[in-house]
Image (cartoon, rainbow, N blue to C red):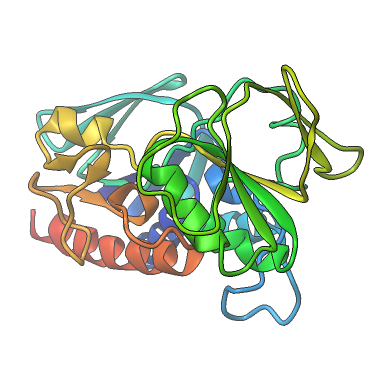
Length: 286
């Protein structure tokens, strides 16, 4: 039986698994965690849900659906992807898996700074996606913790919505080309504080900054280590893929946040479906 292995258990990976499993393809999903979606407290811009649903809740439904259709889900860390005599060999912390085709749906890594309170308040005022969560901070005070163009782009998304936006550089210099209306604080951040939700940002010296939300924006969105090692084209950490998920490597496909673009569940689900259809066609021909 032809086989497809999907690396990543977020919306792109699970969407792909639903399509390949329904097509009668042996489908294995290897995932380390739920990625950015697992850290999302509220989702209300995804089709089909009259009420707000949590990221973990949406993930649980997607996993259950994929398993019902016959996909095998394994929680493990992928340590390498190599060419095999036929197809690919995927090395993981629980063993080596073989497959005729591989779909990369690893998401886009969000760097988490080692600052007290950040992990503890994820989903309760700490966010990693302004376009996802800006709506929940209408008329409120927020901050963006980070530097460079990535942080400035998050700030630009928040400025028309929030009452105030402060860029926290955590000791780094003030970046160039600041958007109008953006405040900047270069003090060293010592903690994000709050009882049940974010209430303020504490600094190593000086008064704390009262805020309702902190958006983490370190690094750049995208990851392409596996694709790069196999010879696929990568721009930074963004995998270069066609609209149907095909890469420059035959049998290797990519879907979701790891290909860049709009970092939203709706796009990830669409990408997963298209990559799955391309992978199905590939394994049936080879």
